Amino acid sequence: MNIQSRYFWLMNFCFSMPILADDLAIDKLYHPYVQALERELEWRMISADNQQLHRLGLGTSLSNRLFIEAYLIAEEKGGGKLEISDYELEAKWQLSEQGEYAIDWGMIVELEKKRHENDWEFATGLLMEKEWGQWVGSANVWVIYEWGDTIKEEVESALALQLRYRYSRHFEPAIEFYSGQNTRALGSSIMGDIKLTGRKKWHWEAGIILGLDDKTPDNMWRLLSEFEF
Image 1 (spheres, rainbow, N blue to C red):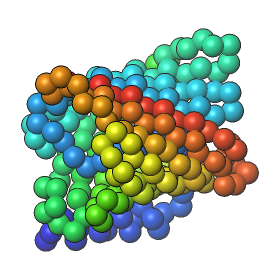
Image 2: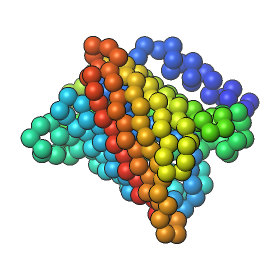
Image 3: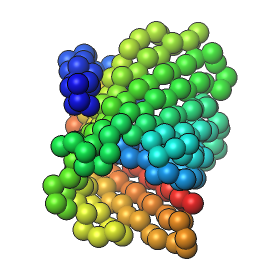
Image 4: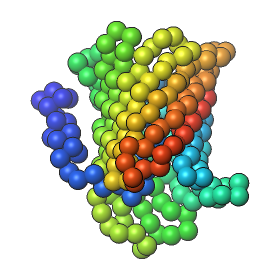
């Protein structure tokens, strides 16, 4: 059984189950690739309704197929004061070689815990990407399980799509779509890479996302900065 057949049932499950997400489903869109000997320092931020969510992560590849990263998550709810709210561990596997199949495949798992409560979240995502010349299409399909003392035990799902145009290494515009229980959003983003000395590289992203329904904030921002070394 090839990679596509092996995970076809998971795609059907994710798209057929009801969309159940307590929070906004807008975040970093993951790609299914891992680079050997890669290390990175990452910061990203989502801003909506005068609230901000920040993630600061440090990651490293353990092989040419496996990448792990640890995050501190902080919230700003007004007044400019940040407070660490969660801890998260993440592991990403590259399932196929780039170009091996019609679609490149990866998988990600995340475990998150609230800092002050015994509340947990386990998420697994299927990562897909395909190239058409200078165009790149990416999809992240998530299944999420939450449990704990102060939250309802439930299974959720989320979807993120991106269509990106590789204008140059330094500048790539994209269109993005996000879906979750409290999220129906469409937006645009720009991103690029800046080559530094040796293996060092800086990757940046900035996007503005617009809500498509009454549950989603009208305007949201997402920013990302990754320093690879």
